[in-house]
Length: 297
Image 1 (cartoon, rainbow, N blue to C red):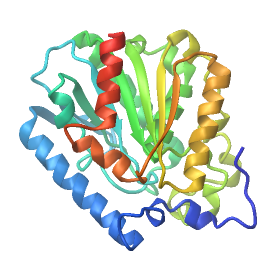
Image 2: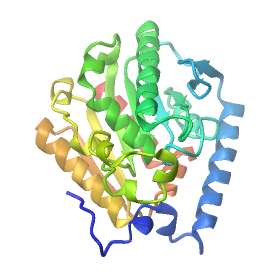
Image 3: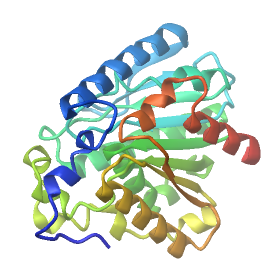
């Protein structure tokens, strides 16, 4: 289990842009990522039939997009939740997975949420539940063959917290359609993170770190559901990010006792191009999803 040590540079360990080898500075990494996903998201909207800014809650950030509205009602659905340490990025620049998936008759739903410090982290977790309730009700109404969630970085944290909520899954119509999740370069243990500059906006008190960390949640209920969970990180993620992915995989594997949990550290990828590739026609995320759909649906 990851522990705070005096010898560890927590700020650097939790600054993914400092570990990329593609550019000479962290700022270049971030700027390229924002430019890339913005352009790719615009291309997706221009080429995939869609319905945007659908309200799933009462606050400004609680909106989602559906891309692939021309596909059959029973099409599988990928729900994508962006990262940005719960304080940056947006739904509008996170539509980039939609075009490659559309070609394989998979709908994409992109979820937005209010950002810190306007919203607290517990409030954001609750917002994602609101969005998931909307998604499952939509999937039930349309007769979708299966629902998948994908989250990047802080988005992976939010998907993991959703998966841990057995009461929500047990009492939400349509949740039985949940087939799998992709947790990409995720944040699963907040104990060290609260001691970094990330927490200036997120403002998680020390006593909340463990309750808000998926690493300390119970996932045994996933065993009966046979949900497939793919945990992915980049070779050029920080050691802490890779360690958290490994530890979260071990938690799921040891508690769910099924062969439906997967871990892969992607060669030559960093925290950002591990999802940037989602915009390409041939990418490992799309291939994983299409493989799972063809095998199980």
